Image (cartoon, rainbow, N blue to C red; front, top):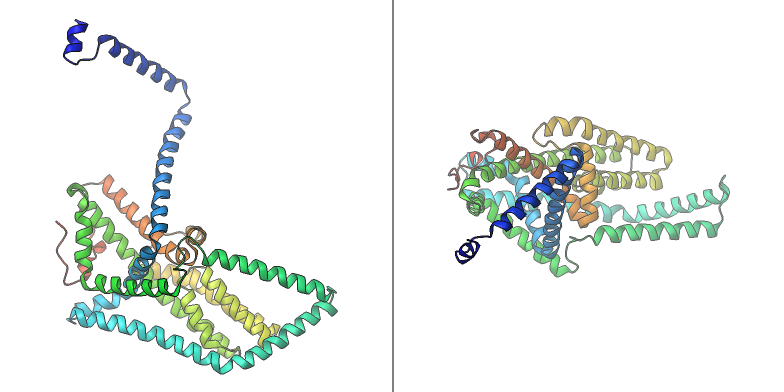
Length: 399
């Protein structure tokens, strides 16, 4: 009989019994282990698989950094322009004219701010330089004659150590895994590529997204479509809120610096506006710069009042503006924001810190959406989450 089974390709009876015996022994071993250990092991190997997949993804992003960074910049700028862009489309403005107004308006606003900053810096730089040199000399003499009784050599050693530490931190920040290209050519190429992607997303964002959705299996397209739309709506809300918060922060701190007589009030406001798009890090750096200028130019009391203004504006942002304007659309806890910004800066330098929060918000909303759909597969997509409902041209869902 066994020979007959072998001729027909069937497994011998003994092998079946051996397999059954091995499974029984394995089952007995599993039953002998504590339930907590079995659950922890199941979670552990799944976590290892996810970590390996995430590592491979990060490695691919690093290798393609000259493509990824312009893409992310274009997506973030598109999210910033999206409310005004769709507002013009809803009122019958031709798409090409809306694109021209959006792009040229953005370039005009940024160029105007930079021109104002450069104009005031060139106007007051000589005076600030003289006052800064005098203030540093006075502070150095205070360290020598004051209660610390430091020597000139000790002060020089401390300055050398501080300068070396700042240089190391700057190198770490600028040379992150995804730092923008090391040459001017890389930067120029990235800027041109980002502009091209921006024009494509504004011109045919619906068609691009439909093509992306069709890459997935037909059974999963509905969930992918709804999750992507919900995530995009979150990114748009985040970008719109950050733009408004950055404007309020810049006006508040620049106005405080102007009223206190601190020099370079306009450049301070421009730096605060640009730095506000990097949560926490940008506010701390720009606020410290304003306080430093007040200290070296106006003295400790004005610097103290400048610190009060900076802290007051930041508290207004963190406890009033962010919760009021962001609402429940971007459900990222402040602790998570700090952690993702720090992690993004360590992994990818300045670009990582810039894109960490919108990326985390997108992933969070997509995960919540997919989890809700998994619990209730028959639930229709939420129309409030659909991008196409805000774009008159692209109302057709992906096939």
